[in-house]
Length: 320
Image (cartoon, rainbow, N blue to C red):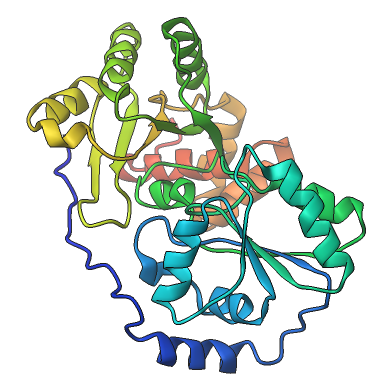
């Protein structure tokens, strides 16, 4: 099992550095148009308040009102960066009502920003209802990219994402549904990214370990805990190894979890004709050009051909 990656991260004190950050934000975003009657979808930090983007600060300063999944969290974020705005509660239970209130504000020409508790709105968070309502009414919607636990965990996973990835939301709550969920993940060539609750993380990994035990090779698994926060940990190992890591300290089962799962892949089969052409062309061309030529000629996947040819480099590129 790979060692834990853990580093204390100091939270940003309220107001500390806010004037300088706002001044930089204003300067960098001075030329950006912000039309009246628009909705801004603003990604916010997933743990460390310093992860807010300068563009987000500039646009939050220029908006007339902030709609928020949790107004207390939004207030804390705004105060930390020297901002103060009227707030409108727009959590999952009140999103439809908030959308009607928001439309009245947009129709009056006001600029409304929406922030969820943490991360990117609409990605397993509220926000989609407001966006649909604004679009349906003909108002501009502007997305301000930023923090996301999904992409943060993927970027730290080191997994091969050439085949893409699937974001699957929360692992299902029932045992039967979890089994079906993990079976689908283990059968996919893509990496799967999902969230798991702290009170279910051990049981969930136990069930995954049982399914993985029937496979020829254990899946690649990354457990990311408390991303960007003081007790962040990113651990790699088999499901059984991660269970051992959690069992070593009861506090490790606390917090917010992101799982990145990818089934182990066997060596990719290579057509005999493709092999012959690759090996022949590789005598005269760089591997990348040889793979591109064979891909075009045979209608094959260039990346697969290139990886196979690279694997032969240590074997002398013997055509026989």
